Image (cartoon, rainbow, N blue to C red; front, side):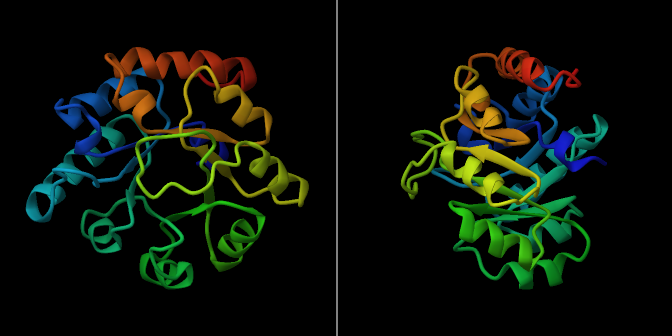
Length: 218
């Protein structure tokens, strides 16, 4: 797998992001629309736990794998190992990157970063890719960091780092080009797809923009 190519349209979602719709259907539509990578992030009001969370994770993983899309679990290393996910994504407050790497072995490891220093530390500790954000204002996360925008990605690239990288936070089809032009390999999207009336059409709109910048996206 070419990780940089796989990260092009990275969909992040949990049941709380789907406006009452079945997340399975939302994911199917999103993948049909062109999503290339998926992270199961089950957080927020009314989110699932225990057996219900595990069952949803297994269903979403099956949907991803049926289309060749990597399935990543947010934060929950135990769940990721239990359902044999393709990897784990953690934030700065979610424990030691080195410890998570030890626990998951050669599975994919993504780390959320907010500046050059955090990006460098994540790569040294064993991250396969990094998420950088927030790019723009977003209501999806309550604990949002200061919005510095695509300039952070540019700074990481100018420091000489070629790590696979996605921008996240408030990204829409209308501003995705700013993130890619700053040096990202892809965009990570939550509400821009999950909150759309048609996740299928929303994903397609992102692909139209990304196709202009990265022509090998189908």
